[in-house]
Length: 273
Image (tube, rainbow, N blue to C red; front, top):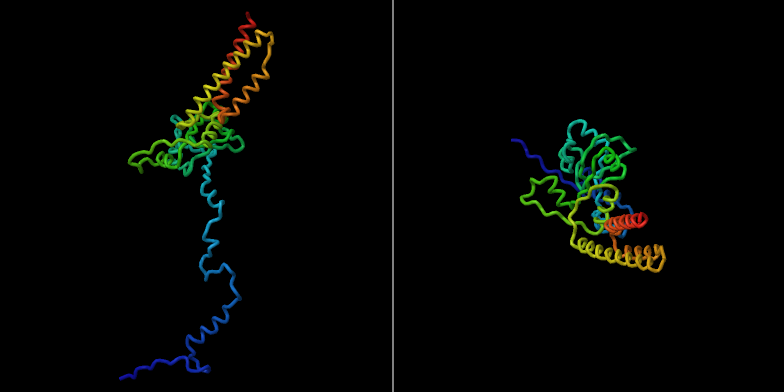
């Protein structure tokens, strides 16, 4: 029978060829020391000042929503290839399903270098620049701005994931200002008016009716006194009234234009008589 080989004994003296793991650790620890650590060092783990996000930059970055850009040149390419149909309104769901844009927060139209766009389309997006609006309206089309919050946008793009579709959200004050600004640029705006906006419009109509009555009374008094022009006092009253409302560029401007048109017609009738 063969004799079993004995286990080699290690760590028996400095001149031995089998010094073992003890000697290895001694030299490694001596070579790895590189001076004192910093105050924020936590044994190699991610320190506290890197685990906690910056404030308020991190919070603002999470709240900031960037719309997905869509160039009119790309939209024209998809229309010419037959992947989008101009006979119907092109919605954000159509853009997502045709893989024209991967919709996350909404689609924003823009036009680089005034690229020609010859197709008459009706397109629903979340935003658009003035160049793209003018290019689409020039050929008879329209840009529709529809307000949707993230839940409504997800239900619009993927309705099959909802058993019951959620209700349409109402915009806040900042979004109402943005939507009305887009209306002033020439877009068709669609959103559900919040109750505070309805109440404010009612009060605005009441104030404008009172202002119109005051203007007519002032005009009658001026005619009786023989003073033909009280335009400065009327303008001061108009500016003082419009500063009290945040929506002076929307409903107030429209009603004032109607009022000026009526005054112009009355002046023309008086001139003819």
